[in-house]
Image 1 (tube, rainbow, N blue to C red):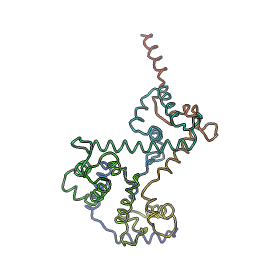
Image 2: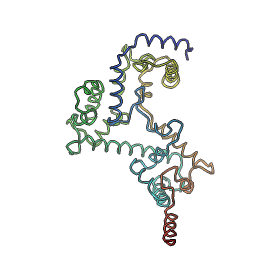
Image 3: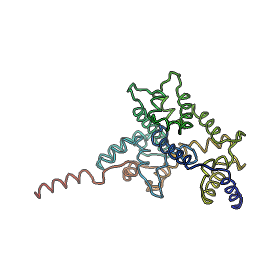
Image 4: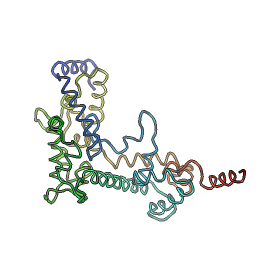
Length: 331
């Protein structure tokens, strides 16, 4: 890593050459907010990478169990349903899932079995997200969407908004065209999922990388330098922010330490690895529930810690019925 004085120099140089009007900054903020709110694919992080699926697992140092529940159930809607179940019913349904998860039928869940299940859940979550977005964008209810329907749903019809978001629209149209595998002008099913989740669709990865180099590689040398990585984000930022970004660039993204990102490093930067996320989640769930530390989870251990894996009401259903009966007797 270069010494801080060098980073300061870079920072000062960047500030001297990167200037934007207040209108440009406002437009940029509007674009990000509007696109993040309506776009089909998961939000991008500040530096342009696709937001990893576990981005909401820990927020501000606080653990959110919703991610764990969705990683087991493969559905946001089903996770919400489990939250309303009495404990015994939640455990009953979880045991059914465990029998499906237990690939070798030994009544234990091994790490590889849990990881395979979580990866399956991630795919199901993407399917659910894509289906919901298709229903939102499908204005005429024919089960498929045109480019015009997507534009209306994502950006609206205000000419000024469309003009401000011209670059995003251009990239989205290119994504639509590649996702439209049969070229009929409509997206449905897997085609629409390729549009909403291109980072999870192998045939879309070439387009993702091409768009990234068009957006970032200003000197067209087929690499992305630190200055290019910062781009417009450096506007108005302080020294501390710059040092954090330099640390990420040098020690997270630039894996061969040559001071620039090649196509492989750009891929790793932009596209989160569900394999790695699933491995981390397996570690997390084992740490929370492997009471005897034998590196496998018995059904009893999982059911004992059912609230880690799925949600349920805090009050046991049987106890709740007894409370009602006692209340009625008192009356």
